[in-house]
Length: 291
Image 1 (cartoon, helix red, strand yellow):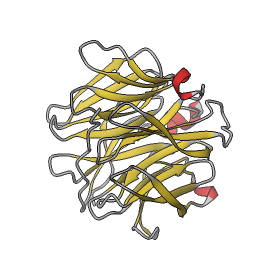
Image 2: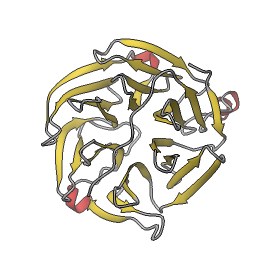
Image 3: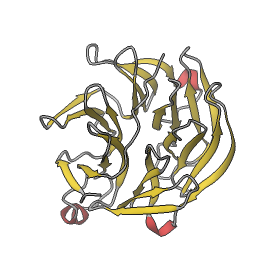
Image 4: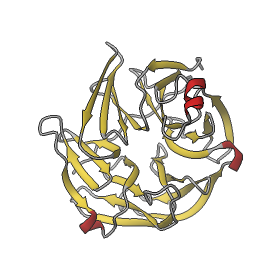
């Protein structure tokens, strides 16, 4: 493991949802309140932002090109040519006004995303949705407070799903053929005084890396939920992480300035910036949405 390094000073209010495009050798992320999709090319240290006109919290790559995005107003397609969200599931279809939070594409090409209440303290009435490749959308889980990190084991037999305020990461039995989940159990419960679990990443060994909002760290858990290591960070509010780099052995970490006092910002010069750790394990290639 290397030391934590600052990749770039970007001062995101709420940097989130990092995913690595292995074809482009580029990292994608969002800055939720600023409505930005961001793209970073490590080869030439180029960082680009694209304002989509509304809060965007998560995304996945489409095999046909462009992105599937989770936004305040629903799920939409977006590309770098039209630069206009094309909604495939808005609030009328979803029968909810709740904004989306985190999301991810499974290895069978379906997009999963969950909602949150949108207020300072969300109620446990949010849901997890699955958008299939034929455009049909399904409610997969209910009674969630704030939907967060989603990921799958390397063999696609287990799905992990975070509900932040209860400090819990759930594990489910996952059927890769049907996309069904069952047998929900607690994978990890984090200590209440050590921040809330936020976004996550799965490595090639099947370990789960979880960012800890207000916890100043990233935690790595083995497939049984045992804490294997913790990486202390120079930011109070890491939001998520993703493996990238040519060998997929670099862990990129997004962070937030949102909610920090002026004094906290002064004592955390890296807050809101993009960080990186060079690891001794590798991640997995990000799958693409097939719809």
